[in-house]
Image (cartoon, rainbow, N blue to C red; front, side, top):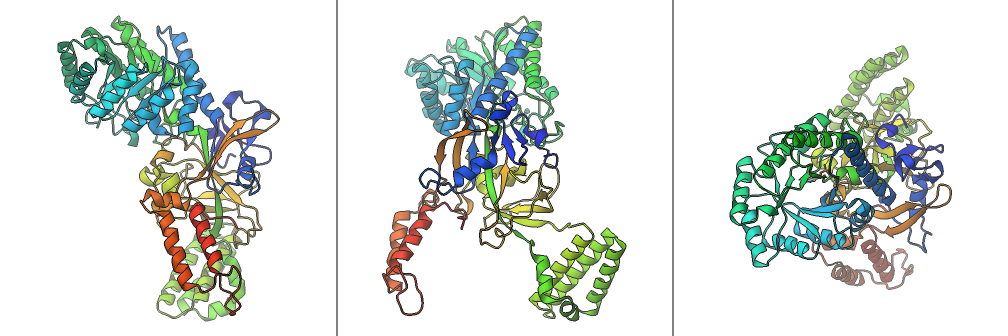
Length: 639
Ligand code: PLP
């Protein structure tokens, strides 16, 4: 576990158990030992072809853990409760979940349900998000806030006003000055008094990747001048009492509490100014930004790490608001945050299989050709490299050894390009170098592990913005990994590989894939890897590059009985037909066309051999195997 730093980034939810498997602690720190769930058992159960009358799910598999969501909400609320009590703050915390982080129906419904005792609400940034938030909050706590952010047209504004009309605690947050005219006009027309918020563009800037939305030149929000104009316009319309909320967003992954306190302090000053100008201010909404320590370093030095936990975050916010309001004699506002990443990141684990590893059997190709045969074919300079390589290896000089090995390889490549050596010799040089590396205990050659996954679909932020997530084998963690590897996905795209990891290295310590998996006969034990902390953003951002769709999903709750769990939902991932439809293809018509063509070209309609000696496949068998392809997921199917 220390090799993968599981305790550093995984606590309190993930650890390695005594069987060497990744273990889930669904209730965080309050999980009792017997409540821990072995992740490998979940995967084996869900992918068992006999499970639930043949439902056996294909990998990749997203394991969703609602208990973790509940624990995150409770922890966030208790962190604020503690800070509020210990600071003598005179109001309460009432967060909203920004649905953009993960709009999955069950995730949002769980958050509304588990958040109900805390009056936890939702934040929407578009019309469909508002629709889903309205639907979910109809079953939520009536005091829960529904914060409407994002660029708005008249339809969005009407919908938000309608949400207020049906008793949802809705706030329309102005992201652009122009939105105000529509809010005033429509609310008057349909006689609904709005509750309005303004999003302030702060001067405080966070310098990381996620901070590009902050600062004076940030994409969103109103400048000081614009906020003053909004106040004036509302006053003229007799609606200044409608302005009740101040919102800002410093950026996601705020690296330190010092920066947070700086931004919150600035916003609190604006809040107090709005009070002075006569607005009916009640809420300060500090946006998102509560970060995740992806690499477990708690350094706050990069987008990968933040130097605080929930408690320190809450304390910094409460302290900063209280300090400013007390100095200005302003009543303490209700504190709202739009924490997304911090709520959902831990709740799901993406499990995928490494199906093969290139270079794994290179050494064996040497023995099949024979050293002398190999050497005979080489030019004199390459043979000299070989002699130097041997001598360096005997002296145990690692670096010199690598130097000669790489030189020898390059010479052989050049000879091959000139047509002077054959493919067997080219393969043998790789094998020979690998043997040398092994002999001097380096085994440095990095292998490529082919994983049954699409980076573009399931880890889009890795490809798009270089975001790193902890990736760990979910079993065999009591066994020292013998090789290093990079992960290459199934897409025909060179960007579809993972070659940067949270340890700062360009390869990951990995185990040999069980005998059998590698040569495709399926006898060996499967090798499963998990990507952790990816519950926020990745599902919604993922695309369908190469027409790979999303993973299968299981929803798993801790249940009574030692180490037992209940799968409360199992959904196969999108089939080939489903992803084809996304691109406007019509799978049913496609199938008919291909089937028709098969009838023309295959002159037998027998399922079995037609006796003409070519052992051809009959029409019916062909059609059913094509139909199966349409029906299955696009990922590799186990043998
Ligand atoms: N609120 C707003 C306005 C945002 O733009 C974002 C995301 O960037 C969030 C909330 C969620 O932020 P986070 O996931 O960092 O909590």
